[in-house]
Length: 83
Image (cartoon, rainbow, N blue to C red; front, top):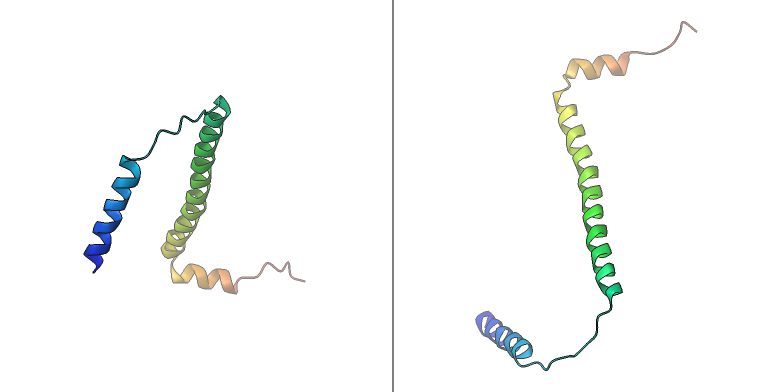
């Protein structure tokens, strides 16, 4: 059943792409500019997301390296100046 659906989907895609008529459409130079801007925005967004997750990964491993004694002393120490 799944194989038959896949065969029909491939046949349909080949027919739609292979037998389509020419569009004779005009793309002005602004279209290229929009495409370049979209590509650059996508790259910038991906870098920002990776940066955030990289910080989380680094923090996870830094927390693993801390010994239990370090966490106990930091939890019990106080910064009171005798007051």
